[in-house]
Length: 301
Image (cartoon, rainbow, N blue to C red):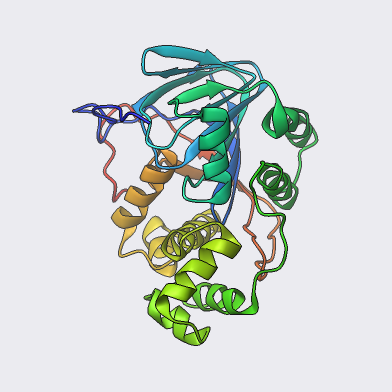
C-alpha cells in the first residue's frame, strides 16, 4: 500500500481536538473496543494517525472520516494502520482497534482494505456486529460483556484464530510476560522458560497468538496501564506498574496505537471490577474525553 506523506502534519504533533463525551474502553491482546457517547453537537478530531487499524461503527447518529482526499461515512468504515485521517461524529460511535501485526489485522488489510487507506464496510462479520454493539450501548452492558463482544467480532474475521488453547510452551511464554509486566521482558528469557530456541519460540508464538512476542507484550502493558489508570492511579503510577519508563513513554505508545495521548482520558465513573484472569481480560471503565485546544504535554497526568 502506498504511504501517506506526513501522517501527522507539522505543528499538530502536540495538538489534538479530542472527542468530548463519555465512554467505555476494553483492551485485550492485539485489540481494543471503545464505546463513546458525545456530549456536544458534533465531535471532531483533526488529522492524526495511529498504528492500530480502526473500524468505526455508528451506533446512534453518524460519522465522517476523511482519508487521502476521500470522505467515508457510516454505518461501518475501516481505516488502515498509520493512515492520516480526520474524524467527525454526532451521537454514539464504537471503535474497534486491531493490531496490524495480528492475524485479524492481516485479514482486514488483505480483505476489506485490500491495499486502500480506508474502506466502507457493508457486508461480513463487521457489518453484522453493528446490531450487537447497539444492544451493548442501549442495554448498558458491562465491561466484561463489551470485551466478549469485541473478541467475538475479531474471532469472526476470516483468518482469525478460532480460540483454541495455545501450545503449553506458548502458554508458558504468555504466563511469563503477564507476571513480569512491571519489569523487563525478553524473548530469550521466554524461550528459555518454554525450553525452545529463540527462533522456534518466535515462530511458535506468532502461529498460536497471531502476534509477534514483542507486540503481544506491548498490548499487555497497555491493557494494564489503562486498567490501573481507570482504577484511580496517576498516569505515572499506571505507566510504571505496566513497565513503561514513565508517563511520557506510555502516552507516546497510547497515542501511536490509538491516536490520542493517554492524558486525554479522564475517569468519571468506575464500573464493578472485572477480575484479571489468565485469559484476555481488562477492567471496563467509563472515561471522559476532554477537548484539548492547545498543546498537551505528553507528561500531563
